[in-house]
Length: 262
Image 1 (cartoon, rainbow, N blue to C red):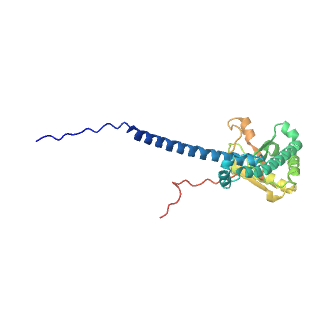
Image 2 (image 1 turned 30 degrees about the vertical axis):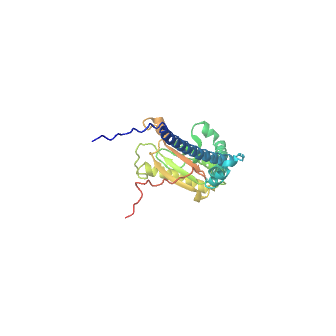
Image 3 (image 1 turned 90 degrees about the vertical axis):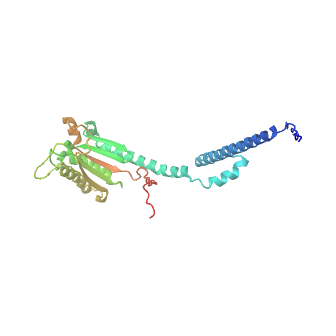
């Protein structure tokens, strides 16, 4: 039986066009995706830049082809720069008012400040007057010295026409005290703060503005292992609290601590 002859098919020299077409298609798809991503980021950047510059009164020119995208996205952006601008103005006025009050207090207490018995500082919390306890009280007592009443009345004259809240804190060193009047430094510091607060109210300061706190020895400003440090820790601080404190932000619950549904 004769064998069947097989005829070889001629080589197709155009088969590479199929692979080449697939490669070109993939490459085109890749550049389309990259262009879409770059256009989206550019749009977000232009929206943010337009919002920031517009908040400060400047006009930004936007290309016509992206104007529709910017209008849609700008409606969704919260006006954070505008909010910050509205808040910063009251803060600036508040701090200027507190600085002016600090200067008035320095003026009436200038001799004591030069002697190192009084210190006036200002922070975002307010203005603090730190008075050494040796100027106000005898050791282990909470009755005001006669010489200190004049200084406290001078402070009250500045504070009585103001509306800020006032916090008076008594501080001691860490040496224990125990007598028939004060079982510990807690009672001594609390009564000393209350004594100063009561003088303010008797000098015309609204009592609803005044708070007295005894801190004991827990907030030292100097080392308690030296005589000089303990002398500095025995003090009374008077803080005029700012009306606009630092911004308070609620801390959100993490997903792991959030309550789960039963």
